[in-house]
Length: 355
Ligand SMILES: *Cc1c(COP(=O)(O)O)cnc(C)c1O
Image (cartoon, rainbow, N blue to C red):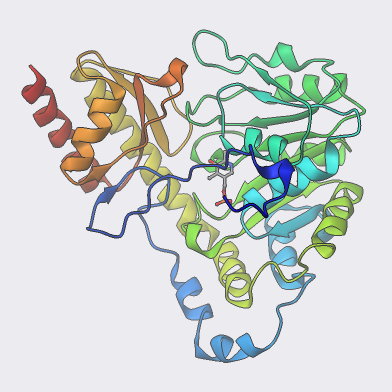
Protein backbone atom coordinates (compact mmCIF):
# COMPACT_ATOMS: atom_id res chain seq x y z
CA UNK A 1 0.00 0.00 0.00
CA UNK A 2 1.37 3.41 -0.86
CA UNK A 3 1.05 6.37 1.45
CA UNK A 4 -1.10 8.02 -1.21
CA UNK A 5 -4.06 5.68 -0.95
CA UNK A 6 -7.14 7.43 0.34
CA UNK A 7 -7.74 6.70 4.01
CA UNK A 8 -11.18 5.27 3.31
CA UNK A 9 -9.77 2.39 1.24
CA UNK A 10 -6.96 1.41 3.55
CA UNK A 11 -8.88 -1.27 5.38
CA UNK A 12 -10.80 -2.50 2.36
CA UNK A 13 -10.49 -6.25 1.86
CA UNK A 14 -10.75 -6.86 -1.87
CA UNK A 15 -12.53 -9.82 -3.40
CA UNK A 16 -10.32 -12.86 -4.02
CA UNK A 17 -11.09 -14.35 -7.42
CA UNK A 18 -10.68 -18.09 -7.94
CA UNK A 19 -7.21 -19.06 -9.15
CA UNK A 20 -6.50 -18.61 -12.85
CA UNK A 21 -3.03 -20.18 -12.90
CA UNK A 22 -0.87 -20.06 -16.02
CA UNK A 23 1.90 -22.36 -14.79
CA UNK A 24 0.50 -25.59 -16.19
CA UNK A 25 -2.65 -27.09 -17.58
CA UNK A 26 -5.17 -27.99 -14.90
CA UNK A 27 -8.59 -29.54 -15.07
CA UNK A 28 -10.31 -26.36 -13.98
CA UNK A 29 -13.28 -26.97 -11.73
CA UNK A 30 -12.85 -23.88 -9.58
CA UNK A 31 -14.54 -20.85 -11.14
CA UNK A 32 -17.79 -22.20 -12.58
CA UNK A 33 -16.85 -21.63 -16.20
CA UNK A 34 -18.50 -23.69 -18.91
CA UNK A 35 -16.54 -26.66 -20.25
CA UNK A 36 -18.05 -25.98 -23.68
CA UNK A 37 -16.84 -23.37 -26.19
CA UNK A 38 -19.03 -20.46 -27.33
CA UNK A 39 -21.40 -21.26 -30.21
CA UNK A 40 -20.24 -21.06 -33.80
CA UNK A 41 -21.99 -17.74 -34.45
CA UNK A 42 -19.89 -16.15 -31.72
CA UNK A 43 -16.67 -17.27 -33.38
CA UNK A 44 -17.91 -15.93 -36.72
CA UNK A 45 -19.05 -12.60 -35.26
CA UNK A 46 -15.69 -11.76 -33.74
CA UNK A 47 -14.15 -11.53 -37.18
CA UNK A 48 -11.51 -9.43 -38.84
CA UNK A 49 -13.94 -6.72 -39.95
CA UNK A 50 -15.20 -6.24 -36.41
CA UNK A 51 -11.61 -6.28 -35.19
CA UNK A 52 -10.68 -3.56 -37.70
CA UNK A 53 -13.61 -1.55 -36.36
CA UNK A 54 -12.00 -1.53 -32.93
CA UNK A 55 -10.71 1.91 -33.90
CA UNK A 56 -14.28 3.11 -33.33
CA UNK A 57 -15.97 3.39 -29.95
CA UNK A 58 -18.62 0.84 -29.14
CA UNK A 59 -22.32 1.77 -29.11
CA UNK A 60 -22.96 3.18 -25.62
CA UNK A 61 -26.63 2.26 -25.93
CA UNK A 62 -25.77 -1.32 -26.94
CA UNK A 63 -28.90 -1.23 -29.03
CA UNK A 64 -28.60 -4.43 -31.05
CA UNK A 65 -27.71 -6.64 -28.14
CA UNK A 66 -30.42 -5.17 -25.94
CA UNK A 67 -32.93 -5.76 -28.71
CA UNK A 68 -31.83 -9.37 -29.13
CA UNK A 69 -32.15 -10.04 -25.40
CA UNK A 70 -35.50 -8.23 -25.16
CA UNK A 71 -36.82 -10.32 -28.02
CA UNK A 72 -35.64 -13.62 -26.59
CA UNK A 73 -37.17 -12.94 -23.18
CA UNK A 74 -40.27 -11.09 -24.36
CA UNK A 75 -39.64 -7.80 -22.55
CA UNK A 76 -39.08 -4.21 -23.69
CA UNK A 77 -35.64 -2.90 -24.64
CA UNK A 78 -36.05 -0.32 -21.89
CA UNK A 79 -36.19 -3.12 -19.36
CA UNK A 80 -32.68 -4.34 -20.22
CA UNK A 81 -29.42 -3.07 -18.82
CA UNK A 82 -26.02 -4.32 -20.02
CA UNK A 83 -22.68 -4.21 -18.29
CA UNK A 84 -19.09 -5.33 -18.33
CA UNK A 85 -19.84 -8.55 -16.44
CA UNK A 86 -22.62 -8.83 -13.92
CA UNK A 87 -20.15 -7.84 -11.21
CA UNK A 88 -20.43 -4.36 -12.68
CA UNK A 89 -24.21 -4.43 -12.27
CA UNK A 90 -23.86 -5.54 -8.68
CA UNK A 91 -21.33 -2.82 -8.01
CA UNK A 92 -23.50 -0.08 -9.52
CA UNK A 93 -26.57 -1.39 -7.72
CA UNK A 94 -24.92 -1.20 -4.32
CA UNK A 95 -23.85 2.33 -5.25
CA UNK A 96 -27.28 3.31 -6.50
CA UNK A 97 -29.78 1.63 -4.22
CA UNK A 98 -28.22 1.63 -0.74
CA UNK A 99 -26.68 4.28 1.49
CA UNK A 100 -28.08 7.45 3.06
CA UNK A 101 -29.96 5.49 5.66
CA UNK A 102 -30.76 2.50 3.44
CA UNK A 103 -28.88 -0.56 4.65
CA UNK A 104 -27.88 -3.42 2.40
CA UNK A 105 -28.79 -7.00 3.36
CA UNK A 106 -27.62 -10.31 1.93
CA UNK A 107 -27.05 -13.89 3.08
CA UNK A 108 -24.09 -14.45 5.37
CA UNK A 109 -22.85 -17.21 3.10
CA UNK A 110 -23.16 -16.16 -0.52
CA UNK A 111 -21.21 -14.56 -3.33
CA UNK A 112 -18.20 -12.92 -1.66
CA UNK A 113 -18.46 -9.76 -3.69
CA UNK A 114 -21.61 -8.48 -1.93
CA UNK A 115 -19.70 -7.73 1.22
CA UNK A 116 -16.83 -6.17 -0.74
CA UNK A 117 -19.18 -3.76 -2.52
CA UNK A 118 -20.92 -2.87 0.73
CA UNK A 119 -17.53 -2.05 2.25
CA UNK A 120 -16.25 -0.27 -0.85
CA UNK A 121 -19.21 2.13 -0.78
CA UNK A 122 -19.05 2.41 2.98
CA UNK A 123 -22.60 1.17 3.46
CA UNK A 124 -24.29 -0.11 6.57
CA UNK A 125 -25.10 -3.70 5.91
CA UNK A 126 -26.40 -6.83 7.58
CA UNK A 127 -25.45 -10.40 6.82
CA UNK A 128 -28.32 -12.77 7.37
CA UNK A 129 -27.42 -16.30 8.51
CA UNK A 130 -28.48 -19.31 6.50
CA UNK A 131 -30.61 -22.06 8.01
CA UNK A 132 -28.73 -25.11 9.35
CA UNK A 133 -29.27 -26.93 6.07
CA UNK A 134 -27.54 -24.01 4.26
CA UNK A 135 -30.72 -22.72 2.67
CA UNK A 136 -31.59 -19.02 2.55
CA UNK A 137 -34.39 -18.32 5.04
CA UNK A 138 -36.69 -16.14 2.93
CA UNK A 139 -38.79 -15.09 5.93
CA UNK A 140 -35.80 -13.29 7.39
CA UNK A 141 -36.06 -10.83 4.50
CA UNK A 142 -39.77 -10.05 4.86
CA UNK A 143 -40.30 -6.42 5.78
CA UNK A 144 -36.60 -5.85 6.25
CA UNK A 145 -36.57 -2.38 4.74
CA UNK A 146 -33.13 -2.81 3.24
CA UNK A 147 -31.62 -3.03 -0.21
CA UNK A 148 -31.78 -6.82 -0.49
CA UNK A 149 -29.41 -8.95 -2.56
CA UNK A 150 -29.95 -12.68 -2.91
CA UNK A 151 -28.22 -15.06 -5.28
CA UNK A 152 -30.76 -17.59 -6.52
CA UNK A 153 -29.46 -20.29 -6.84
CA UNK A 154 -27.15 -19.23 -4.03
CA UNK A 155 -23.38 -19.59 -4.21
CA UNK A 156 -21.53 -21.66 -3.14
CA UNK A 157 -24.37 -23.95 -2.05
CA UNK A 158 -26.48 -24.19 -5.22
CA UNK A 159 -29.69 -23.97 -3.18
CA UNK A 160 -32.73 -22.00 -4.33
CA UNK A 161 -35.64 -20.11 -2.84
CA UNK A 162 -39.03 -20.18 -4.56
CA UNK A 163 -40.73 -17.60 -6.71
CA UNK A 164 -43.49 -17.25 -4.08
CA UNK A 165 -40.91 -16.46 -1.43
CA UNK A 166 -39.36 -13.81 -3.69
CA UNK A 167 -42.79 -12.29 -4.28
CA UNK A 168 -43.29 -12.06 -0.54
CA UNK A 169 -39.91 -10.36 -0.16
CA UNK A 170 -40.84 -7.88 -2.91
CA UNK A 171 -44.25 -7.14 -1.44
CA UNK A 172 -42.99 -6.62 2.10
CA UNK A 173 -40.14 -4.34 0.99
CA UNK A 174 -42.00 -1.98 -1.35
CA UNK A 175 -39.67 0.95 -0.71
CA UNK A 176 -36.45 -0.88 -1.49
CA UNK A 177 -34.82 -2.54 -4.42
CA UNK A 178 -34.65 -6.32 -4.25
CA UNK A 179 -31.85 -7.66 -6.43
CA UNK A 180 -32.00 -11.32 -7.43
CA UNK A 181 -28.66 -12.50 -8.78
CA UNK A 182 -29.45 -15.28 -11.24
CA UNK A 183 -25.91 -16.09 -12.42
CA UNK A 184 -26.76 -19.81 -12.19
CA UNK A 185 -30.46 -19.83 -13.02
CA UNK A 186 -30.07 -21.72 -16.31
CA UNK A 187 -28.97 -24.89 -14.56
CA UNK A 188 -32.33 -25.77 -13.10
CA UNK A 189 -33.64 -22.71 -11.27
CA UNK A 190 -36.65 -20.61 -12.19
CA UNK A 191 -36.04 -17.03 -13.29
CA UNK A 192 -38.24 -14.33 -11.78
CA UNK A 193 -37.58 -11.83 -14.59
CA UNK A 194 -41.26 -11.93 -15.71
CA UNK A 195 -42.12 -10.30 -12.36
CA UNK A 196 -40.46 -7.01 -13.35
CA UNK A 197 -43.71 -5.95 -15.02
CA UNK A 198 -45.54 -6.16 -11.72
CA UNK A 199 -42.84 -5.22 -9.21
CA UNK A 200 -41.08 -1.94 -9.86
CA UNK A 201 -38.57 -2.69 -7.09
CA UNK A 202 -37.24 -5.90 -8.67
CA UNK A 203 -33.88 -6.10 -10.40
CA UNK A 204 -32.91 -9.47 -11.89
CA UNK A 205 -29.26 -9.91 -12.81
CA UNK A 206 -27.90 -12.53 -15.19
CA UNK A 207 -24.60 -13.15 -16.94
CA UNK A 208 -23.01 -14.60 -20.07
CA UNK A 209 -20.18 -16.00 -17.95
CA UNK A 210 -21.65 -19.31 -16.85
CA UNK A 211 -24.35 -20.88 -19.01
CA UNK A 212 -23.28 -18.95 -22.11
CA UNK A 213 -19.61 -19.89 -22.12
CA UNK A 214 -18.34 -16.29 -22.25
CA UNK A 215 -16.69 -15.59 -18.89
CA UNK A 216 -13.73 -14.03 -20.70
CA UNK A 217 -15.89 -11.65 -22.73
CA UNK A 218 -17.24 -9.91 -19.60
CA UNK A 219 -20.93 -9.44 -20.25
CA UNK A 220 -23.78 -9.19 -17.78
CA UNK A 221 -27.39 -8.06 -18.12
CA UNK A 222 -30.24 -7.07 -15.89
CA UNK A 223 -34.02 -6.95 -16.13
CA UNK A 224 -35.95 -4.25 -14.33
CA UNK A 225 -38.50 -1.50 -14.54
CA UNK A 226 -37.30 1.19 -16.94
CA UNK A 227 -36.85 3.65 -14.09
CA UNK A 228 -34.43 1.29 -12.34
CA UNK A 229 -32.59 0.73 -15.60
CA UNK A 230 -32.28 4.46 -16.11
CA UNK A 231 -30.84 4.82 -12.57
CA UNK A 232 -28.14 2.32 -13.46
CA UNK A 233 -27.48 4.09 -16.73
CA UNK A 234 -27.03 7.35 -14.88
CA UNK A 235 -24.16 5.77 -12.98
CA UNK A 236 -22.76 4.09 -16.07
CA UNK A 237 -22.75 7.36 -18.01
CA UNK A 238 -21.02 8.95 -15.03
CA UNK A 239 -18.22 6.40 -15.01
CA UNK A 240 -17.65 4.71 -18.37
CA UNK A 241 -20.39 4.71 -21.03
CA UNK A 242 -18.27 2.51 -23.32
CA UNK A 243 -17.86 -0.20 -20.72
CA UNK A 244 -18.77 -2.98 -23.13
CA UNK A 245 -16.35 -3.39 -25.99
CA UNK A 246 -17.32 -3.95 -29.63
CA UNK A 247 -16.20 -7.57 -29.80
CA UNK A 248 -18.19 -8.51 -26.74
CA UNK A 249 -21.30 -6.79 -28.08
CA UNK A 250 -21.30 -8.77 -31.34
CA UNK A 251 -20.36 -11.97 -29.54
CA UNK A 252 -23.25 -11.52 -27.13
CA UNK A 253 -25.73 -10.88 -29.91
CA UNK A 254 -24.63 -14.02 -31.75
CA UNK A 255 -24.90 -16.07 -28.55
CA UNK A 256 -28.45 -14.92 -27.92
CA UNK A 257 -29.40 -15.95 -31.43
CA UNK A 258 -28.07 -19.45 -30.81
CA UNK A 259 -29.80 -19.94 -27.51
CA UNK A 260 -30.66 -23.58 -28.18
CA UNK A 261 -27.00 -24.54 -28.27
CA UNK A 262 -26.56 -23.18 -24.75
CA UNK A 263 -29.73 -24.83 -23.52
CA UNK A 264 -28.39 -28.19 -24.73
CA UNK A 265 -25.13 -27.53 -22.90
CA UNK A 266 -27.03 -26.71 -19.70
CA UNK A 267 -28.88 -29.99 -19.97
CA UNK A 268 -25.60 -31.85 -20.39
CA UNK A 269 -24.22 -30.12 -17.31
CA UNK A 270 -27.35 -30.95 -15.30
CA UNK A 271 -26.90 -34.59 -16.25
CA UNK A 272 -23.21 -34.59 -15.39
CA UNK A 273 -24.02 -32.86 -12.10
CA UNK A 274 -26.28 -35.67 -11.06
CA UNK A 275 -23.74 -38.29 -12.19
CA UNK A 276 -21.00 -36.58 -10.16
CA UNK A 277 -23.15 -36.07 -7.07
CA UNK A 278 -24.22 -39.72 -7.04
CA UNK A 279 -20.65 -40.93 -7.48
CA UNK A 280 -19.41 -38.71 -4.64
CA UNK A 281 -22.15 -39.91 -2.32
CA UNK A 282 -21.11 -43.48 -3.03
CA UNK A 283 -17.64 -42.76 -1.70
CA UNK A 284 -18.81 -41.13 1.50
CA UNK A 285 -19.37 -37.52 0.56
CA UNK A 286 -22.19 -35.36 1.76
CA UNK A 287 -23.40 -33.45 -1.29
CA UNK A 288 -25.80 -30.52 -1.13
CA UNK A 289 -28.55 -30.73 -3.71
CA UNK A 290 -27.57 -28.12 -6.31
CA UNK A 291 -29.42 -26.24 -9.02
CA UNK A 292 -26.20 -24.63 -10.29
CA UNK A 293 -23.24 -25.70 -12.44
CA UNK A 294 -21.30 -26.69 -9.33
CA UNK A 295 -21.78 -28.86 -6.30
CA UNK A 296 -20.81 -28.20 -2.73
CA UNK A 297 -19.56 -31.34 -1.07
CA UNK A 298 -17.86 -32.56 2.08
CA UNK A 299 -15.88 -35.76 2.56
CA UNK A 300 -16.24 -37.91 5.65
CA UNK A 301 -12.52 -38.64 5.72
CA UNK A 302 -10.54 -35.72 4.39
CA UNK A 303 -10.80 -32.01 5.25
CA UNK A 304 -11.88 -29.45 2.67
CA UNK A 305 -8.48 -27.81 2.65
CA UNK A 306 -6.60 -31.08 2.34
CA UNK A 307 -8.80 -32.24 -0.49
CA UNK A 308 -8.33 -28.95 -2.31
CA UNK A 309 -4.54 -29.15 -1.90
CA UNK A 310 -4.23 -32.79 -2.88
CA UNK A 311 -6.38 -32.27 -5.95
CA UNK A 312 -4.31 -29.28 -6.98
CA UNK A 313 -1.10 -31.28 -6.63
CA UNK A 314 -2.64 -33.79 -9.00
CA UNK A 315 -3.64 -31.16 -11.56
CA UNK A 316 -7.27 -30.50 -10.62
CA UNK A 317 -8.51 -27.19 -9.28
CA UNK A 318 -11.59 -26.88 -7.09
CA UNK A 319 -12.56 -24.00 -4.81
CA UNK A 320 -12.13 -24.06 -1.06
CA UNK A 321 -13.34 -21.30 1.26
CA UNK A 322 -11.70 -20.86 4.64
CA UNK A 323 -14.82 -19.37 6.26
CA UNK A 324 -15.40 -21.37 9.48
CA UNK A 325 -18.94 -22.43 8.61
CA UNK A 326 -18.08 -23.93 5.24
CA UNK A 327 -14.43 -24.89 5.60
CA UNK A 328 -15.18 -28.62 5.48
CA UNK A 329 -16.57 -28.30 1.97
CA UNK A 330 -15.18 -27.83 -1.48
CA UNK A 331 -17.05 -26.32 -4.39
CA UNK A 332 -16.67 -28.37 -7.55
CA UNK A 333 -17.59 -26.89 -10.91
CA UNK A 334 -19.31 -29.37 -13.20
CA UNK A 335 -17.08 -29.83 -16.22
CA UNK A 336 -17.39 -32.15 -19.18
CA UNK A 337 -18.22 -35.77 -18.35
CA UNK A 338 -14.62 -36.89 -19.08
CA UNK A 339 -13.23 -34.28 -16.71
CA UNK A 340 -15.56 -35.40 -13.96
CA UNK A 341 -14.49 -39.00 -14.47
CA UNK A 342 -10.85 -38.00 -14.02
CA UNK A 343 -11.86 -35.92 -11.02
CA UNK A 344 -13.66 -38.84 -9.38
CA UNK A 345 -10.77 -41.25 -9.99
CA UNK A 346 -8.39 -38.70 -8.48
CA UNK A 347 -10.60 -38.22 -5.42
CA UNK A 348 -10.63 -41.99 -4.91
CA UNK A 349 -6.82 -42.04 -5.10
CA UNK A 350 -6.62 -39.30 -2.47
CA UNK A 351 -9.02 -41.14 -0.17
CA UNK A 352 -6.84 -44.27 -0.50
CA UNK A 353 -3.75 -42.25 0.40
CA UNK A 354 -5.21 -40.83 3.63
CA UNK A 355 -6.53 -44.19 4.81
C1 LIG B 1 -19.99 -15.64 -11.35
C2 LIG B 1 -20.95 -14.83 -10.56
C3 LIG B 1 -21.18 -13.49 -10.86
C4 LIG B 1 -20.26 -12.71 -11.76
O1 LIG B 1 -20.43 -12.89 -13.02
P1 LIG B 1 -19.69 -11.98 -14.11
O2 LIG B 1 -20.81 -11.71 -15.05
O3 LIG B 1 -18.62 -12.86 -14.67
O4 LIG B 1 -19.18 -10.73 -13.49
C5 LIG B 1 -22.18 -12.81 -10.19
N1 LIG B 1 -22.87 -13.41 -9.21
C6 LIG B 1 -22.64 -14.68 -8.86
C7 LIG B 1 -23.43 -15.28 -7.76
C8 LIG B 1 -21.66 -15.41 -9.51
O5 LIG B 1 -21.38 -16.64 -9.12
